[in-house]
Length: 377
Image (tube, rainbow, N blue to C red; front, side, top):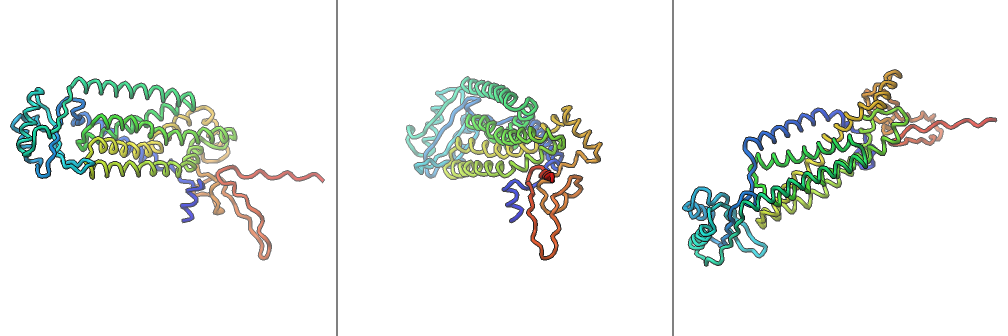
């Protein structure tokens, strides 16, 4: 429990750098696998993109097998997907998605379904979408993505640093590719709601990254001037300080999204709500992961190549200090440096028996206190 409270107070000192290489390998495997799946299997697009019809048959007894038998008489592509859904009013529906050549043929499907379900023709709802409308949606989504990327990259480069902007964009593309790859691998349908969720993911993905970057910039300004800390050391401290904030915000965001997925898709059978929440769920998890395992490591690699940090490493080596040891000495309050650390730990003074203990300042997360100057007598 004490360890957990230290994490919440930002007094922990987790060595994130140790996990960067294995996590990087995992990310590369996921990205390559996603790209291969998209290239080989493609992505299942809804009728909103490719054109087609959706027939909804309200019936308590009509089954998907009966609907399949009806649609098979109109061709192999007439009925492609079948789903049992329940409206908010408690009405049971058999929803069929497919493609027919003309509107007249779509009306014939309506009549056949009504006859098979033993209901009136007017009770069967049909929605038909032309392929040109799907092309317009695709074009709008592509343009929105390009504009978003350009504006966000420009803002981060202006507000923070160009290196941070480049790393953040890599992390965003990482999240999008993995999310789309997930849909491709499991043959999940991509609808306009999914596209909207993809665009929403970008904002959530960048949020965690910006939180880390803001602390990195703040600590970088304070600690770089001392000449005692490499950028990797600053990164380690910054990640430990914002760890619980990122975990808490991601958890609080995931809970309602998960609830929306379960209630919307699996209880009420609403495909739009299900598509939107599923994409959000995958993207949020990927965004939280990429802020620590993708964006921050790339930023550290780029920043460590700057002349000022190269000079700091050279000076540390000359003093016999290992620049690759990033343990934060201000956090270690156990009286001994972290394992393998060449930095000094916070040493507790020895107290003689029967004497009162002197005050001790641990200076969590900062520099050891400067010694007071002796007054001249």
